[in-house]
Length: 443
Image (cartoon, rainbow, N blue to C red):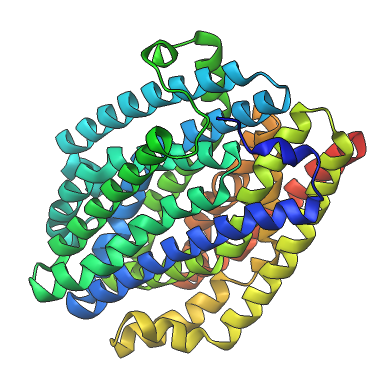
């Protein structure tokens, strides 16, 4: 079948960005709602300790599953540029190599997770009363991780082919399954945290099944064969170098989770972990429009770079930055106004509500600057420039946030952790601004 993305080099940029960003944003929104609903059910029908348990486990599972996302993003960059350069066979071979890499690496790291589960959980802050429920939750979640990795890889490939709505459905399917299964397993069958874990695992399987159906029976132009799965060293190296940006970002997020969860436990105990559990869910939800614009931006920039249409690349950068900054500012205002109701959705624990409201407001102070760091890293990844993409991807968590989370609490206690987030967002935005300014002048 003929791929749909040739319009990337011809249609108006605004129309293209809307077509790509809107489904991506909706998919992330629904996925975020699932995360919020999951936390609501755990917080209200299990305990606030349940929120702390999920807060410890999720960064570990996302780190393993991000292997699929990394391979997906790295391969999608090659696929977009290959289609732009009319080299369809290279695109097909890239997809075959992505399949082999994703399944092999995901299964390997899941095995590591099972063997060293207790040590890993303790490293990520699973201490005190949190450890035992975290072990039960983690062992179930690990079953679904290879399916999640596959779905995350496919999501990026599908978007690179020019099917943003199908990519959206790969995010909506697991969210819908989870929202349906949470009340059934957690409440009706009274399975508690184990019910939440099984709901999540089954939802990952559903997403993987849907994406596989699209490639076999849907409109995908991708051709799967054993010959294309056989590793091509040049392609796998390029996938790895570009995907390393995403994996390094998620790896840094996981290192941050280790530092953050331990600092939260040190200065705030189980309550500190629960507070961040609520704040992180709202962060995931609040950032969905900017993340949607970023994901929509990538295949357009990659295709036009491959087709050597640099004026269109420049126009795409400008429009993505302006629209995402405006949206981020609107989100910031809404969070400041509705902080109390947002926190109250997750828990009826009045102590947790009172503590979380000011902490959330402090954590979101630099939200309007988020667009620069996201678009900056995404652009260099889209055009195949791994080194600046890696630097910008690591700037927020690696260069700023991890050191701040270690240093600030020593002077300001738990308050220092919340102020670390806007300081890190500001530093990352400044670095991205200068990199993008230099690049747009060159274009």
